[in-house]
Length: 268
Ligand code: 15L
Image (cartoon, rainbow, N blue to C red; front, side, top):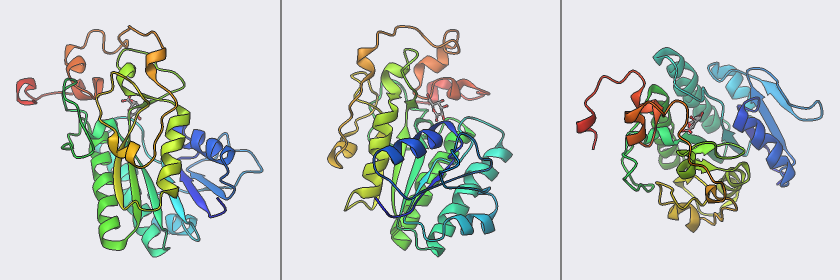
């Protein structure tokens, strides 16, 4: 693909992984951005920018065809930090994209947008959002923001509710939530190239038998996961889940129990 694709969060874990992986599958006009340049080679294009700053965001989105938006705080943080980095940062990015006539945005959503669903409930793309943290709430905002920009301004978008994207699954929760780097790259590629997307929500998960998510929407769009957590023999609880009975009930795990002051019985 010769069209310019901007990857935000290119110095981070997944943005950085995608920046390299997309170059390997034929994206030859990639631009990376992040607050600071890290792990990006000299021959790769990079501009440092903070998405909180609208002027810089306008600058980096000029002439861009599609944005792969992974630039955000990736875990729970204070309300203020999440508001400024994830919510305002993402809003700035979409608005700059509209002004600069960007055609598509792939949004790194998260399972924490639906983390307060029970592990016994099978979800699909139409399930009610149920954020389990300020972080998850920012992902709900991003999903609705991209729906609005698709409906109102025809910027096509794909929101990937990423489970746990790691080299390999590490604990029992990951047996349900794991997605490999290669499978996530495939989903991003579909979001950029699929002819008829408008606003789509898919789950970022490999082909795991114990998945909590019905991902038939992604399959309809052509997703053919190559990996599965089933080939790993993992029966360990994570260190943090070990003593945390509440975390074991809900899909979002320890994100649900942190600072919890609610009534578990009411969260059905
Ligand atoms: C996420 O959204 C986080 O970015 C990542 O650090 C993991 O916590 C992951 O979800 C998960 O739920 O495993």
